[in-house]
Image (cartoon, rainbow, N blue to C red; front, side, top):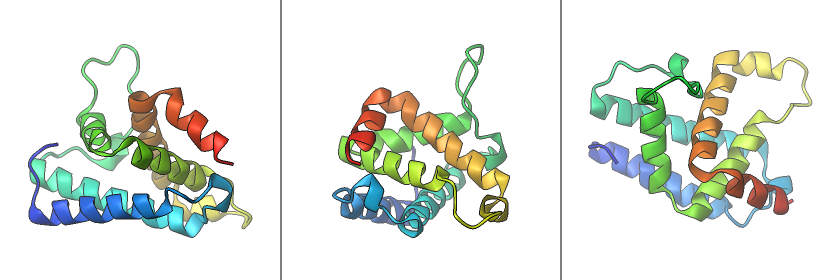
Length: 145
């Protein structure tokens, strides 16, 4: 992983601990509030990494690279570096978290409240995780239902 501050190391450790804590929870039992908490932690880690790198890359540039893109964006590279740091079980748990964050909400308009940018960011992390794990994490998440 790229150079990081002690705060970034603490945030990464806390994220890993939370992912480990939620690992035994099935996808169906995962509460959206827990998933959103984990995603906020992931965003904080990413913010620390951006600051440590000194990059000007912003979350609005989060997207899945097109086949013609070479090399991947700085955002995707940073996301992949962080995701490679996680164990396979933590990656699977993060996939559950991302699916829970993408799920439709019972309250009408809630996604609008969260914002389209936030949802694009979730999809950006999903794209990076899928690029790293392929179908494996998806299959394991769906099998845990």
